[in-house]
Image (cartoon, rainbow, N blue to C red):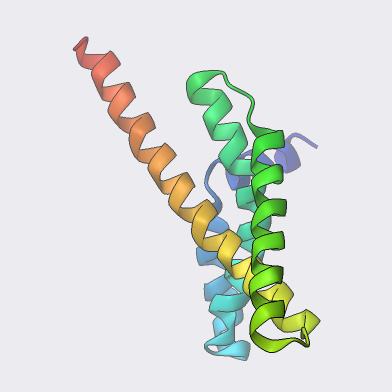
Length: 127
């Protein structure tokens, strides 16, 4: 059971590892669609990674805020889609929203990671 907890912790703290593994494993069968599959899986992990990383660095719990922002993004994208097409294709809308989450959460995670490294270096060198 400890191995499962360790694997889960690694994937939560380093979701890019899951991204790379899925791309490498699925590349043979799915070709370029493997990147989309990897992005979809990583988005799920990033929904947990971003709040956990912020809590680890600054001891602030923003889990509810991340989910609230995700809901607001979904609403805004739905209104935009509705105004442009008048008839909403559900699967296209869900895919578009999920990919937007991936981009935003990946940028947030990368930024948090970079800030965490800088803060660790500053603490290490006592600056």
